[in-house]
Image (tube, rainbow, N blue to C red):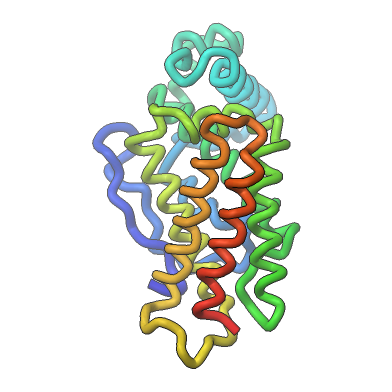
Length: 242
């Protein structure tokens, strides 16, 4: 489905029954999460500066607990105590524990998309190899150096990365695939006869699995696995793009 993000059903519970996205593909990578975040994570946005400061403390506490003790340590009670807010106040913005974890995931993906934007991640034009490789390298750098999002990384590689969080991540992958395939400008004459959207989804799937292999046991990422990921992902695109 080129040009739009797929509607994805979410697990029951929490905020409604879907992580939704029948929205046009944003023009900038840094905006990919805007429609997705409306249906996941925090149930509302803080308007007042004082409330925003408390929300920031809640998310910092969630991130800290993820890093210190893993996802199982994150509960509404433990986060509220660490952030210095009441559980009742926290429910104003977060429906449950999973909403807290979703918001950490959302903020991490927003940070990643900003890095993609800065790197010029794209499949467009004759220099697509350079811009595709720049996107892969931006992802590697994000996983290696994003200390502000350390909780995101713990969550992404944990066994608790499931349910609604998986739906949010899939919605982001689909949005990224739509963005990338919309930018394609030239195909090989012998390219496989599949949609550009499926091509882009498969490319992103290669990245997701490759990063799992490279980082699951090595916090810095296994260099050999990352080199193979980069080679394999670009070789896959080479069968389509010219």
